[in-house]
Image 1 (spheres, rainbow, N blue to C red):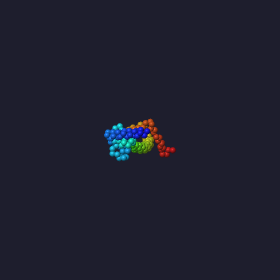
Image 2: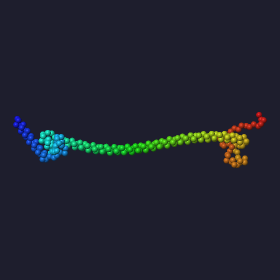
Image 3: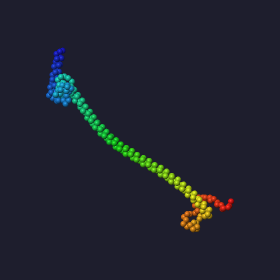
Image 4: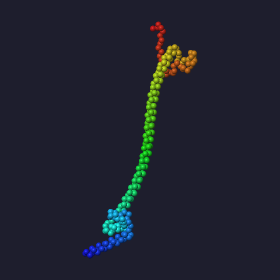
Amino acid sequence: MPDRIEKSKSKKTRERSSLQEYIALNGRTADMPCSYCFKNKKKNCKIAERSSRCEECVSRGRPCDGVLVASSLEKVLAQQRKLDEDEEEASEKLLSLHTELARLQSQLAEAAGRLSRIRKIRRKVKERGADLFERGMQELDTEDEVLLALDGHEGCLVGDLQHMGVPANVDWSALGLGDLGDLGPLVEGPSVRTPEVPQRRSPGVS
């Protein structure tokens, strides 16, 4: 039994030695040393093609993570490149949105300014209209008062002329008043009611 174990160890040693020699002759220095070589500051961490362990790890009969480290680094680098691309794309998108926001804010400010000016003008026009309406009503009231006063005076004068015996359809030129031909009849149309003239009493008549 001990002989078999010894023979097995001897065979394993020869295999390891052969593999180590093959790696030494055909291997290349790893771009990323395994953890053991890195910690022990080994200058050369040689790995042959299709080999899962470096020369040092084969010689010592220990596991090697050289390939795993390189693979993990490649994944990290690929992820970093992807993140860099995503960051650049996000930055461009953010810049585009910022530009669009600035444009919209400019349009909003312009529209708000126009709305403010329109409302100010409309308020002034409304105030001006109200002022003109008030002035117009005042002028109308004044004109109505003047017309009423003139109508009263006209009525009195017509009454006096009728009292003097002037007929309704008087011919002013026949009375020697040719320059009053445009005065028209004493009473203008049937709609004008001749004011009543009080009877004058002769002196001494009761």
